[in-house]
Length: 485
Length: 69
Image (cartoon, rainbow over all chains, first blue to last red; front, side, top):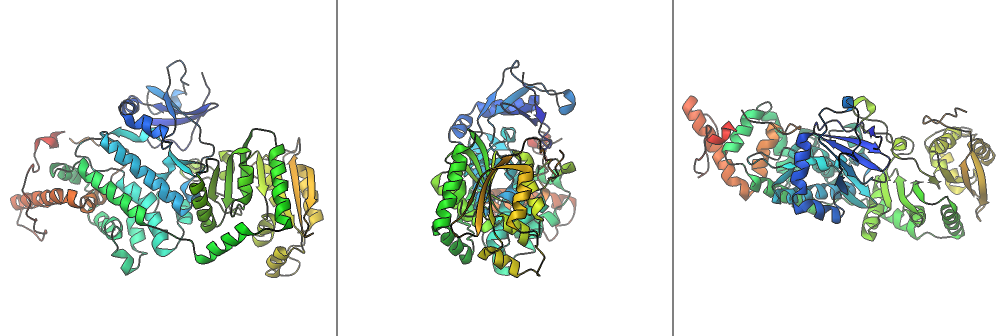
């Protein structure tokens, strides 16, 4: 019997609780939750969606094989336990680019449309139920499926709007990125909030008028009459056909909706992708050797400042899961489009500001985990990153190195010297003497405190040095980045 | 007594909006919804500035057997 740890973000649905075990993720169901699962398993939908990768692989465990969490951990008597295949790295919608959120939304709607065809529905509609295997979205919350009750409206419609549709519309119509808003508000963007931001001509657009503007007005006018309206709708003959029509309409709306990164981002991206000189070739070779020589299997690689994904792709030659992390959501969008085209199963592109990585959020700060708590890297790539953190974001060099060390794995890091053209540009905006600690010798001393440096190579240009380093035994670093021993 | 099975609150405005957004499939439902409201209003008090119902037939007003569910 496996020992399991409760997933602290799983508490809203009383019929299903998630636990983590060594060999997978467990979902403990109430009697009602189990009946819902059996209803799903009785349709061809479950097997077909698992086969196509749209639903996470799942099995219902025998009683002997099922873990038994303490009663205090459950709001219900356990009636059955599902085991799900593990997702290599759990990410959140505020770390996704625009097209990632849209593809997740389309997956949600596609599964709902299929469910309706089989007399089922999805009780919620949140992007937190979608995770990524490379550039492919997968729906992970099997507890969402339940039998459809004739005459009930689509209960999760509002949630679909606040967490999927409105963030996508916000960015597509106003150009304002949705990630900071979703990070600030876990419930998403309310119809009235978005309606207040739109220009007149956008308010009249098809889809926007109904789902945002009229939706906001309806909410204002009909607050607090829930039960009465439910009864009215039922007696007026509200049926599955209507939900189906709404879902079809939303799918069409989303498929037509587009957001394109600004031209300058496209141009810079294409330039970086095709850029090649002696330094780049050496960097490629250095990373390739580091990845190939790392203890195999290389479970997880973080590529910090991934940009066009050049090194993430090299890492993916040997690693099962590579996070291509960049703070520029527009660059991540372009990378995602390419990876989707390539059907990448290993590289997950994510939008994260390295100077302020995703924090603990939600109820008691336990619902959404900080980036570092969701699976640390066995290897971190930090190429063309240190000068941005240290100079542009004013993070002391010591802190930068300590953060790398706190991640726990080996490190490939590039240090651009003080006379590197890019460093000069960054320093030019700062007053003299502000970054006196930004020196190669100082960096190497700091690096040696926490790491054993295995290899060092200064590139042909003479202004950048690469290091391959492994965590030093005994120098344990806690998650705040302070050395404790 | 209606059962409220979901753990989410569907939101009153959001439920009504689904009738507006449902296109053709929703026309008959919308018609009946407003027609039912008018009948209710007529019985209780004078008609108010509720929009006139389109040419929809009345069926299954409040008090139909489903309400007992």
